[in-house]
Image 1 (cartoon, rainbow, N blue to C red):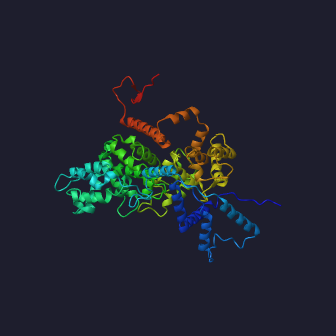
Image 2: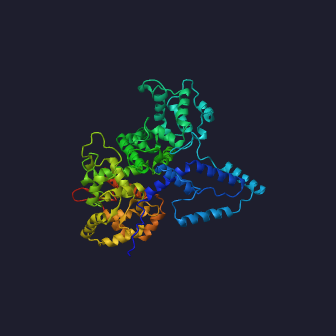
Image 3: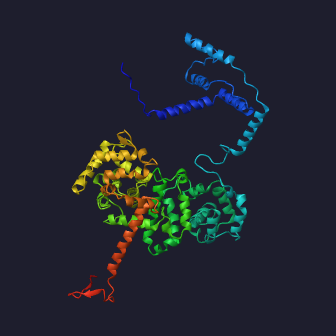
Length: 570
């Protein structure tokens, strides 16, 4: 007799878990269950043992019978007349054992006293699971320091003028009272005036004043009921929306450009202000918006450090020290790389432009997939052509470059997984890996490199990522905490020849140095070195354009054509 093959997979686990949860809640909602739990709790409080009352499975069976069958439930005390002789004998023996069991002894006074002490201790230490009108799913608790009565004196001290505060006097209110960055001042002032004040829109900033009464109303509506994260969320998003959109950050970044001391040099270059703002916005969404849909929810904001980074850039005079989101050096690297590829200066890239990235490091196959299915969280710009997928905007390029130069984060791995998953089934199998790696082998052979066989590459990746015997890789395999930092090697093998060869020929000493350097991420390391390279090239070009110093007679000589040349130092 052949053995039946049993499928031990977990394909139905999710549906089974849902059904078990449903059955549990049905059982929990019964009156008999509540009575049983109440009796057990009373026994625990009195210090006595828990008496056997009723097995939960019997109550659950009765519930299910009444819910899903037309027949009424059978009595749980009477024997089952439909059962056979063996079942009846088992039922009789069960009742016999129960009758012969000794009765529980009455708890001693010492036991009762200890039970009451334990109960009193837990009542004083364990917080309530739910408090009406406080917190809840997706939101924090109102801060005690945010209550109006608690801050009344501070508010009164900031509004000394009888007619209210103008925008310049409102900075201390924005930062010290509300807890927002100082560059939020103008936008916050305008928001309060438009909702609680009066006057035409043209005179809001020039002649408008916020009175104490208006600010108190704003405090009760937008500050007192919420915690720090939700205050930030409600101020930045548009009124009536439940998410932060791409354009919502623009006025705040414009104020940052105007007042931050680390960006003073950009005052004479206003053309770069929109590019810097677009870069900061794209980097924020790349890190915070895990859904990659161009909408930052309150839940996503809570899981990020965006609010603390806004406060940090407000306090830090050297903006390049705030490497997350705001660093000018990082913006310089991103924009210059885009500018080098944009040969026709139309502020967008096509396939031929992108193939030049990294000295043609990417294969043609992956470039095509980037344009076809690569993550693009933002809607096309107004006036974009109908075939907008054939073009890449600057913010889409920021997503691409951040994903290419730092594959140690979830957004990057999701970006490349989507591109390599040809059939969109959530698995990368051998057919898809062969599709990309065959081109890699051809490129290695044409450039004279030692060709790494496909089987050797698969063994390497399977061992690194602990795949086991499965013939495919999932996104969950790549984003596990113990493998996320090295998962990018998988994609290097498939379509980035330069990084793959660099990995094969890596120096252990340089790897140790890399782990000891001060950079937190591969992107920070890449941006630092690339900025120095671009700055050195810019200095050389500037020196060539400015000409030579004629006074340095010892270093320069005339050739036969009376042209100044550099004399060799040897």
